[in-house]
Amino acid sequence: MTTHSNGAREKADKYTEFVSRGFGRDLAKRLGLPQPAILRRYNPGAPLIEGPVLVMGQGAGSDDVAKVLLDWHQDVRRHATPKEKLGAIVVVLDELGHPEQLSAPMLAVGAALRDLNKNARIVTISRPALPSDAPAIAAARNGVDGIVRSVAKELRAGATANGILLANGIAADSPSAMASLRFFLSGRSAFVDGQFLTASAVGEVAGDWDKPLNGCVAVVTGAARGIGAAIARTLARDGATVIAVDVPAAGDHLAAVANDIHGTALQLDITAPDAGERILDHAISRHGRLDIVVHNAGITRDKLLANMDAAKWDSVIAVNIASQLRMNEAFLASGDFGGNARIISVASTSGIAGNRGQSNYAASKAGVMGMVRSTAPLLEARGGTVNAVAPGFIETDMTAKIPFATREVARRLNSLQQGGRPGDVAEAIAFFAQPAAAGVTANVLRVCGQNLVGQ
Image 1 (cartoon, rainbow, N blue to C red):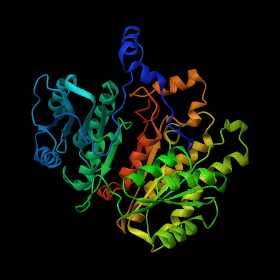
Image 2 (cartoon, rainbow, N blue to C red):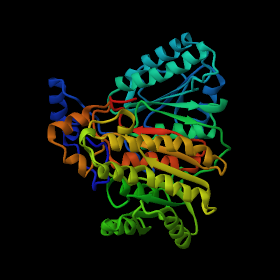
Image 3 (cartoon, rainbow, N blue to C red):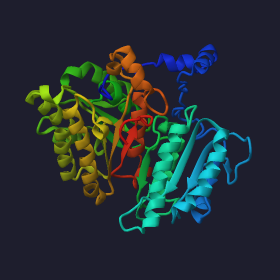
Image 4 (cartoon, rainbow, N blue to C red):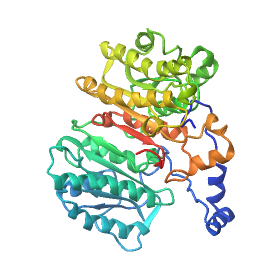
């Protein structure tokens, strides 16, 4: 089963709609059926979080994070009030030194779980375990990973749990950590669950949270339909001028997307040797700059490896990874790629967990993840970042063609018990593109509702 597609419209999950209200909700409860919630997704102008935010932790880091939340005009609590509904719990664990220190804060979180609102958020802020750490410190820090992923599977009503890892000894309230916190608290992360972002050191970055991409020029490949079109529209909503790229055969759909977002269209086969140069030429001649590159274009040619032929294997590698490598070389060699450049690639959970009949596709998407991690140091010198987003089951034209029973099982095999939307992938990409995410690089963020396969 392919996990994402460049298909057209977002597809409705009729079951989720049925069990979210009235008779359907009561029937599902009586029969013990899954009860997925309608997720709170990002809406410009809506509150960041619905309800008070409980900040837990004993060190100075928790005080600093609470101050930032107050600056964001959030209703902050430092101690739980029984039966008060909470919009979020932020647990600052940046001073962990031994696994025994996990008991008090996590039991306190457990006591507050029953008071969470629908679509609530739990976010931990901790440090990654390093080979140089003392064994007790590494054990404590790695324990947070297990806690977050387990709690995420216990939550209901659209609530999620995610974590922020503080790299290089940075403070809990560093700009990159707080940008990550804002993403996890917001509706942008509706389908992100049980995941971690690593935040690195970066100077203060001024940003407009409502229009963070004002003045930026972005290119999106595979932009004619589905996930690609959603990415283009989301970046444009956030203020970017978007160059929508797709193959000539998709020209009509591509033009419609570009016109809708007041961007420009570029018909291009991204496997062409000069694709990167042509994108740069278009960006500079039409818009004077290029700041953001989103590698979304991708294909599948599924077959069991025993039945695979060279044409199917080579075409997937050519489109899904070789083209990105070649285009990135052109962008990095050019002085016209912005001083705060962003590269974001669309990977897949198939590249993490593998998938029957998709050895070629999984190879290409795992290759994307390796490329991202190795490209990060190359961009660091110019203040740029590179990240990947790995979608799980996303509601597209393609997944709508999966047989009903198989599709229903695939939808429910995650902690949120539903498929994601193309817009969920787009929101994660838009976060990575923001100036405020300047210290967030070399991450692979799964947008899969904590799918039960893989990590």
